[in-house]
Image 1 (cartoon, each protein chain N blue to C red):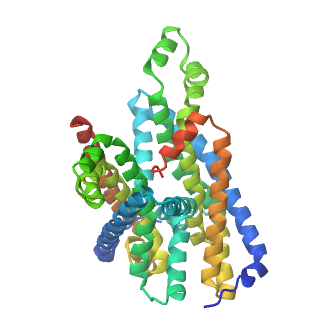
Image 2: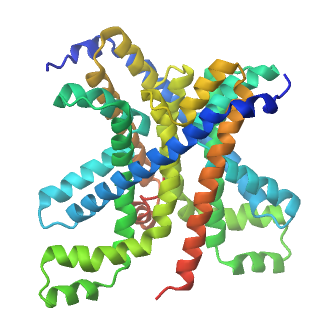
Image 3: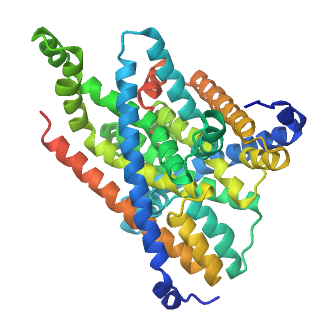
Length: 226
Length: 220
């Protein structure tokens, strides 16, 4: 069996476009996911049942349904109700909704790790909810939240490959495209696997630079979390 | 558009078959994953530097590439490279199993770190051979302590199986695609599929949480 990586080099423009789209989608989805996650987390830890239960239901639904089904629902079912998004928009929305639920759980884990005395002390000082959440509790989350949060962001970069199924021209779709033109499945898919690996490893190294050494150790121990 | 669940439900037989198939694939893939994970754990604790490095490369690669790409590579590359022509079903189970194996290895490593060192030293000082130390003393305890996490891993595997629809394994997602192409009712079919997935995953993850709580209660 002979390998023909030249065919991939000839089609490198498609791959570069694919990498660009993958990075674009995942960066937007990760940032939107963090925002959604923060909101859902605040609802989830609320004392009021009316706020807490919708958040619990949202998190459980998102965590127990495969992302692919969610994408298909949004892409194939919503147009029947007159709501029609492009593949790209569907991708952003689905990925960030999906990631939001996971980020919410991560943030909740962090809030629970902050000692209860902090809450009591802030209340005893008569600080308002908004003030002590923003200025006292959330800043402490940084180290607790960073390692598992990195894992979830990494998962989202990887999950963006599912969008190839609704014809978003990201990296996996680019591979299908090249494969369709040149019929070199082994080389193409191996190449994109390596590209994904480089993206993920760089991302991991980059985030490790942003955190304290203690939480770097943490992330190496928490690899089992997806 | 009006929802017509009543017309879809009598036709939902293929969905249920697909759901059973998903669970079947999930169990087999988890079995492969446990084998691979145990192998990786043993290799990681090996005396040889090369084996330990190989494990690191493997787990970094599995963690750094999407499951979809792994499945595609496995399915398209295996036959041309080795000349073995396996069907989509076997390829699917193997690739999902190899994917989950890397994560199971991490779970097992966590479990191993909780086993007191004395267990191993005691077994060694009794003169047990290395294989027996691992398979009769250490691993049973490791597996016992990580059962809840393995149950959760099973839901992860169930959530990867929809990707096998791309390589024409007729599991729940593929079955629902076929059903809505036939009935032109994607809304109802996809909602049904989502409900089935939710029931499967939710019940398994509740089981996992129950086991976790129980194991906290009876911690040594």
